[in-house]
Image 1 (cartoon, rainbow, N blue to C red):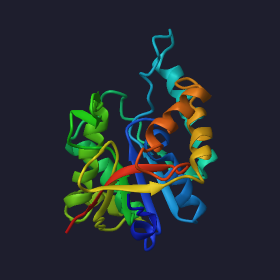
Image 2: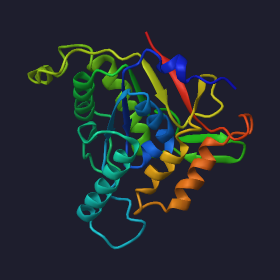
Image 3: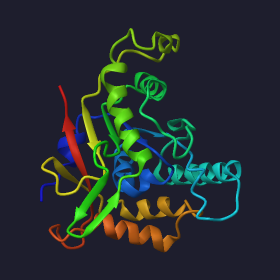
Image 4: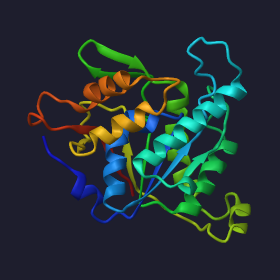
Length: 248
């Protein structure tokens, strides 16, 4: 198994991480993000929704749960080392992320302002995610649509200046082209890469467990074990898996 951290990130300074819900980042790439920040890369996190429908069947209002989940998420991002100004909530309704021109515009503006060298986001293609033989799960609709919006916002909308010209009222915004992506929830794919997170997996677990309305510490540890332990990886080592894409 090849290790790809240095090859992918050696010439990267700014990484944008776009996920549908609070806790998605930790689940899929918390160790990688912690490693990037330890290497003094600038990481910005965008959550499309605040996860306010994830009540676990408890009686609570969406307004109450939104506050809880954003508070938990802020604690988690602080644990990973993401600064508060780099932790952005678009507050699109949980379960209501659409790949439409309005949402594309919101994300294209964020890309134009931050100007990332690489973007990490969801699998935009598969309705059913195949992890291994007899282990599958549905790719959440918000996840699929978020991945699609990221791709569409990156090309052509963030690049071509006649799309959303009002964005340029912000002096930090400019036409931007990002051509490198790490997509989560791909396994055994020809484009698969592994990022070693052996030294940051404990920070991933601590960050993930900040989402106490959704997970216990045991849940966070079990998640890390499930996603970062691999039979064909050296004993005692951990990695997170992605599909690595370079576009024209």
